[in-house]
Amino acid sequence: MDTMKKPIIQFDSFQFHYFSQAEPTLYDINLTINEGEKVLIVGPSGSGKSTLGNCLNGLIPFAYKGEIEGSLKVKGKETRDMNIFELSKMVGTVLQDTDGQFIGLTVGEDIAFALENDCVDQGIMKSTVQKVADMVDMGQLLKSSPFELSGGQKQRVSFAGVMVDDVDILLFDEPLANLDPATGKTAIDLIDQVWRKMNKTVIIIEHRLEDVLYRDVDRIIVVGDGRIQADMTPDDLIAANILPDFGIREPLYATALRYAGVKVTSEMRPGRMETLRIDLVKEAVNTWAKSRVPEHHGNDRPDILAAENLSFQYTKKRKILQNINFNIKEGEMVSIVGTNGAGKSTLAKVICGFVTEDEGRILFEGEDLKGKTIKERSHLIGFVMQNPNQMICKPMIYDEVALGLHIRGMAEDEIEKRVDRALKICGLAPFKKWPISALSFGQKKRVTIASILALDPKILILDEPTAGQDYHHYTEIMEFLRSLNSQGVTILMITHDMHLMLEYTPHAIVLAGGQKIGDATAADILTDVEITEKANLKITSLYELAVKCEVEEPHSFVQNFIDYERGQRKA
Image (tube, rainbow, N blue to C red; front, side):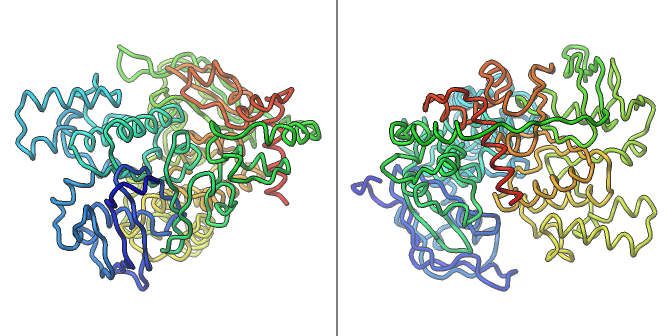
């Protein structure tokens, strides 16, 4: 942190209390952020970190009403004395829920919105929009509808819409939530470039700590229970080993160091993989690697789901899926990974019967599913979509989770038992009688998972099940899915989360450009440079650690870490 720079954001004994809540969400916040700093804010769901961001961009108190105590100044002015328009000229925000941010009918119109408001000359507007769109790799899609884009593409359009307005402070609310790992790296790179070249003050609110730390940040603010629990450099924070206590996943390489018996200190520069002092940890990592004996993994159960020469296209010009073949055994836990737009979600739609394959076939327990209706398939296969807003159709949580059971004509007492069980599993039991509108994006996600779990399917397909979830709820959901899996439910997860892929899914299928380019163990995939590059994945930091420490078999090191981690969880 450069102490010579002026404060640009100052919280002084700040407190905020939503009128709709019994208790304040933020207590006694004292925080100063200086001009040109890059700050990462982390914390579990409900900790108050998003509320902190909403206080900065003016959504509080102008959109979300409540009582403010203390002081919050942006560029020396009290925010309560400004209007939301004045604040929007100082703070640009990229929201987590991108659908709620779109205004234009095309990508170009959406990016240009702020310029149109400012009555910028048309010629200057067009060149500015093209320049910013090219920066986020969306320059070829200016005439596309934002709602036709993949999750990652939507995120980039939102980013461009903020970049186009020359604000001093850029606020990113979970910018990586819908991005594949490589695109996430590009986004972090882009944020880093803007920070360095344009001297912006950057604030990032994000669960994926390790991915943000791909590039430098000045400080990490840990928020918990509405209070600031820590304000440290990345090196000091990782060394302090307090992140798991606050429901935040520390970087995998840091966990591996602790498993190897290393006492992690700030002097080791553990805040980023790129800065880690390998000379101080190499011996311990190698000793641990040699002490581990690989476990045997196998599944001799019959196939429950298979694809044979599967192809699908929405239009004649471009095939979305091309000649896909795979076999998934009963009781497996499988991740389907790959680039944004690779065909992962389309594959799930074909399996569920939402769209019909053009060639090939899908087999369930050896039987061709062709001709079976969506309703018939739903008794066998449950599907949880990536965007909860596209699934939810009831105003109340209980009614939403009970909807499928009512459609099946189940008795009311049995419905209540199933709904209560599903809500408890997904950490939503206290909100049983709440309206959906009162929930965060992550909580809505859990409602959709609960609504499908209540139907008790044989195969569960989840599209980005942990997007927007903190480590506590991520672990809760994944451990539940693992327990379901141990009872024989086959689980397929479309995911960008490499942690999830490594820790929970022994089998991974990789798609790129509509083709299957990998079908192996997660450790095999995430230590294969060629496959990870083609599929926009990211070589795991465990592999990087093993290579830098010159471990004899880096692949085995990764697999041993996964086995050890699973053992720790069971214990």
